[in-house]
Each structure stands twice: as structure tokens, then as C-alpha cells.
Length: 282
Length: 316
Image (cartoon, rainbow over the protein chains, first blue to last red):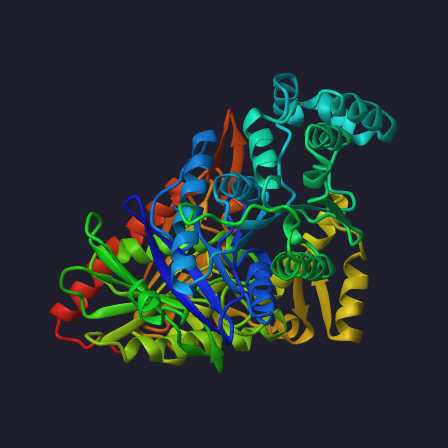
């Protein structure tokens, strides 16, 4: 196994990436993406370690920096909704370079936070994708009312509420009921991904992002799909604690094992009923 | 189908014609194992001094990664080649966090100086670094008798730095993001098992002991080159530790510029720096990064030109 550091051209910028090349002919390619702000190796080398663990199983891996992050060129002072579409294009550019270099036609995508959304967006457009793993994907956007409330977090009233466990519990219950909905984009990516790929959502116990509202929204999206596609979806909750920030060594190890295992499974077990990539898609 | 090695090799470099620099990925051996480095060079003629950029410790490596990139590119546009690298235990390096210590940081940086010195067209090498990377840069510059060193809000007392580092674990517990022991119990774990989990960072006893023992003012027993110490502060005055550091440099016969860059979020330098605002996430360090880079490039231009105009070889 060896690694190549590369700059991938993309719309006038250069995206830094590391390609992990396994010994022998690769069985497939995995692309690892971060959330906003983290470089390609991710916190505590989580993606570097994941890439090498997957590489040991004969699968090539790329981990990338978005434009304006890590060693990529470009400048990102503000990250807005339209930046997500740009990230999708960047991921596809890196993916195509990786597929060409490795000579593979099947890929798996894994992304943390924003990277999970980008992975689904890419998968819904690329039939070559056979699996997506989203770690803490932000699927449900906050409602306008909740956005306004979140701005008041530093107020005196908020401090009083935080300091009182009973008040805090009551207010949190009410806030959970004010959560928003999945956007039409998320719904399209979700169903588009499951049309030809496995989809794993990974959370940790006590992750605040996995709310009852989010589960309801996911169930609603699944209910609209035929059984065969529903069976491609998996929600896994790691018992080691919250995944946000990978703030314990046990959580890092559990995440690496879960993502590596999923990637290997995507290339080892055929997906019943999955569309084979067409020549045009290649 | 064979792997397209030549295709990947062609992608190892890029050139930014608009900004005026080029970059090349290297796969050197630093600290006894493989890693990744980036060499930034000006597109025009290079000045006679190149810099090794030493990264900080733990999560500051991640949070300052874009800062380091901004520094490297700004310096290159000004004519100075800059090498940034991933030390062992960080980023794309071969080894894991159990290898991280003060010794590993110093060895990686010293090897990086040797690597950069051997690159074509490079006559003299200096060091730079932010926070703990600033401490490493200063120690390596002194030990290797390098002519130039630039530090941004450098750590000056390892013991205080380690105390704060361990306390972050306790703050995280108070905030409810991690579960576990208090500081005393953590230190006991460190003593008995040789390592502790500090918010996901594997802190070894060796790293804790080595870093706690270093005091930059005492460590710098010789340095007669040119130094820059940049304080990032809310007010007009630098912290007392940086004043002492600058005085220490001068007492050794060095030329030292102590500069203050004011920023309302100075205390967050080295921390996570994206904040959610109306419909966007904003990098709160974006302008600060460029301001520090511009100040450093001006310092380097001023002093390097003066040194070499005087016919000195810059050796400290």
C-alpha cells in the first residue's frame, strides 16, 4: 500500500487530496469527505486511519480538502447554501480523477456532517456509487422560529434556563417540537442514493443531532420507497458516545471500524436489484 | 488495469499564475517515518532565505492548518520558499498520536530544515510557527543556529500550556460533550497507564512531562539572528510572556521585532474559528490570518534584504 498526494484541478482551483493505493489491483474506490473546516485527514487523523484500514482490504481511497480548506487553493470566508453545490462539484472532480487513476467503476462515499450531505448529493447523480456513509449528516434544517431562538442563546434568560435542570428539560422538549423539515434537496438525494446504493447513517449515543423529529422525517422518506430500496438503508448508533468532534479515542476507533466495515461490505456483497453502471454513465 | 502512477505524479504540483506561486507535494521521511509536505515557491526569482513552517500541537494543528497555508503562500508570493509538513502523529503522517512528544516535534522540524536546505536554489533556512509551533520554531532555530525565526503567539511556558491543555478536558465535561474523569484523576491515569484521552487526543506521559519541563526563555541560551514575535491581542499590549521572550532574544544579541496585532477574537487564535451567523458559517480568523501573513512577509523582506545587503550569510 502506498499514498500519493495530488492537486486536482477544479474550476480554476486546485483541490488537495491523498490517494491511498492498495497492493494489487483495487477492488473499488472510496472517497472520504469532511465537514466544514476540517482538513482531509480529519481530526485526530480519523480519515487517514480509515483510509489505511480500507486500503488493507484492497480498496483504493481518496481523502480531500474542499477549496479554501487545508492545502487546497481558493478562499472561503463565508460558507453559504450555494457553497454546498460547489462542494458537490469538487467531490465529483476528485472522484473522477481517482476513478481514472485507479481504473475502477464502483465507488463508495463517506462524509462527516456537511460531507454526508455532499456524499448523498453526489451519489444521487452518479450510478457508479454503490454505497454512502453519512456521519452525523444534518438532514433536518432548523425552522425559522428555532433559528431566531438559537440567536438568543447568550441572553440572560437563556443562562437562567440552562442553569436550572427542570426548566432546561421543559424548554428543550418544546424546542424539539419546533424543528424543521428535510428540504426537497435532501429528499431527492436520499431517494436518489437508495435507487442504486446502500445508505448508512452513523450517529453516536447522545448525539443531539439525532432527534425524534429527524427519525420521523427519515421514516417518512423511507415509507415512500419500495421495500427493496428501504432495505438498503441502515441507521447505526454507536454506543461509545457522541460522534461530534470525535472527542474520545474509543469513538474514533468505533467510527473508523464502522465506516471501514461498511465500505468493504459495499464492495463484497452485491446489492440486489442495483442498476449496473451504463457505458454512458462511465 | 494498472494504476496510473504517471498520471498521479503529474498532479503532484500546481501553479497559481494569478497569485504568483507554485506548490509541490513531497513525500519525505521526517522523524524516522514517511509523511507529506508541501513546498511553496515564488514563480519569479527566490530570495536567499527559505522557511520551514512548524505546526502546533493537538487540535491546534487542525485549527491552524489554513493559517499555515495562508502564511506559506503569502511568503512565497513575496519571494520566500516555504516548506510546511505533517509531523509524526499528525495529518497524513505514517505514525499515530502515541508518537507525539516535544522530541517528535523538534526532530520533525529539524529534519524538515535539512530537507529544505537540500532543495535546489535554497541558500539559507529559517523557521516559523504559531502557538506550540512557535516554541518549536524558536528552539530549532537556536539549536541549529539558523538566522531567522518568526513566531506568532508562541507558547513560552510548557507547564502552563499543558495545564491548559488538560483543563480543556474538564471544560468539555462541564459542557457535557465528553464523559470522564476530573483533572486529578486524568493526571493519575497519565502517571499509572502512561497515557490519557484528552478530548480525543492521546496525550502520553512522555509528551506531558517533556512539554511541561520546557521554558522557552531558559531554552534559548543562544540565538544571534533575527526574530519576529507577533502577539495576537484584544488590546494594544502584548502579554508579559511575549515581552520576556522578545527581551530574551535581544539579550542574546538577536534583533527582535515584537509586533501586536489587535483582534477582538484574539483568545480564540488556534481554536475552532467558524461561527454561524445569518444563513452562513463565517471563518472568524480569515482576515486575521492574512494580516499576520502580510506583517510577516514585510518583516522578512525588510530584514532579509538588510542582512544580505550587508554581505552577511545570515548564519546566527
